[in-house]
Length: 245
Image 1 (cartoon, rainbow, N blue to C red):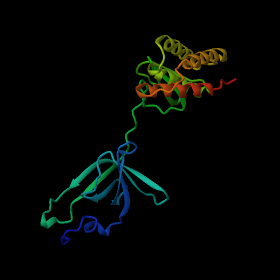
Image 2 (image 1 turned 120 degrees about the vertical axis):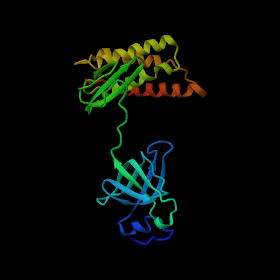
Image 3 (image 1 turned 60 degrees about the vertical axis):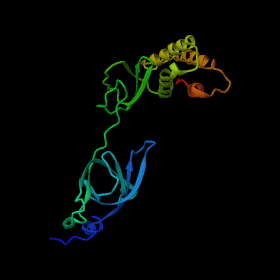
């Protein structure tokens, strides 16, 4: 039986004979609360071993050097803690084993199944809500109307989908909102046709731009500022659109 190695940590003592790597533990990766902590670890294909005080939790990401160049990411699916609680006969044996797994996929947009890989643009409309998925034209929907966008009309699709989603918060009176929504719906319907009619699209885009130009032109602050800024950016995007010929 190996002799306990005093107050050394697991990686300094029992784990010192194994290859170790400098890694970064990433908590809440990609979120505003993301935290990155440098650490040491023994890396294996299915797990990693850390000292017992390493701040690693289920759902974290571990970033490690890739021997081929760059970095490799491991997703922490499970954490097993071995804590000897200072027992003299087991000093230096406390450690954490992090089991690697597959990072869960982000939830699919409302009304669209995540069971398909999308290659073509798809719009999903539910009331004033609009979603676009990119992929093949096989779509499993739970509710709402899902349509495949004609090739070449992707930018129009994205801009109009954003308009439909954000019009309720725009700084417009209810009549203008209704006119804008009807115009956006006509555009949405037309770009999902086999051969979209450019005249219909021009009229719809002109109407949509006309209603958004009715917004107050002076500076707006406070609670209405985000909605005003969105409408102005949408107007700019609509102005820059071109209809395929």
